Amino acid sequence: MKQLVLASNNAKKLKELDALLAPLGFAIIPQGQLGIPEAEEPFGTFIENALAKARHAAQHSGLPALADDSGLCVRALGGAPGVLSARYAGEPKSDARNNARLLADLAGQTDRRAHFVSLLVLVRGADDPQPIIAEGEWHGEILATPRGAEGFGYDPLFYVPACCQTAAELDAATKNRLSHRGQAMQQLIARLPAL
Image (cartoon, rainbow, N blue to C red; front, side, top):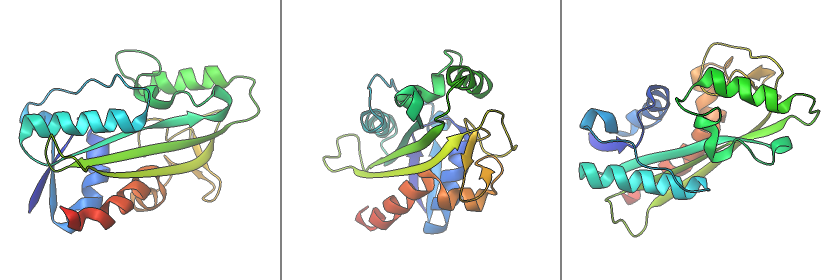
């Protein structure tokens, strides 16, 4: 089985990515298991942050590394929370506080369109000159009250009109097929023979 270091300590993200990659013979190791600290994410774009995280994990582990930088972009908020999605309400990170801030910021707004973005970067080594990059978007709208108990982050507020459910109401297989991360992963999987 081929090993990949996941440049994240998010257990739910690990579960999603592991479900998609395990059938292909990849074992995903979270960076924390190897004692690798989280990388800085100083950039204003998903791609730059994902690349920095992947290179950081590869450098510290000596293994190929996979990073996901993702977030929610809300039209009425000019694309916010965007790259700051995980820390929208400040430190320490909290899904509940992030969701509360999002609802407060959207109070009185009628345009509630939003989309999730996922940028996946896989590097074969820290200095890989040609990283594999994949991107996915998942469009929906933000509800006024949360629904559902699955998923994480903004999933309870993210309504998917085609499914008549929030991301937090979808079963894992459906979410993995439709989501921004699922779309990006399918692109990445198509390019994995290059590894």
